[in-house]
Length: 101
Image 1: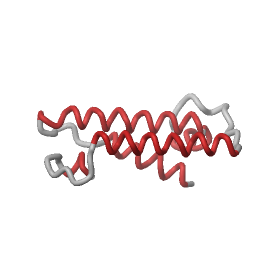
Image 2: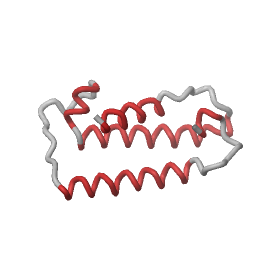
Image 3: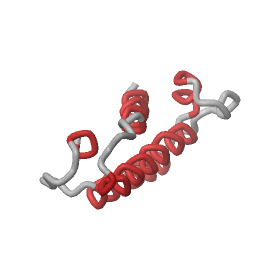
């Protein structure tokens, strides 16, 4: 269930309104690219969630839970978190609320 929430949150980030100010296009594009990476990588790692969300290509796959897989996914989450901080530094008031939140 937590993977489902994570994937839905990523999908919401991808739906950010495209009508942002020109100076913020690169931030928006980078956030969109990160959200897509998070969504499709998580779908690959958790194919049952991908199927539930209607993401194609994983219907015949099953998860292979193990401690090593869990540790790898945790490391991946930390990597994405670091990328997000690099794109949108905390407290940067120059960004639109859409990109900042």
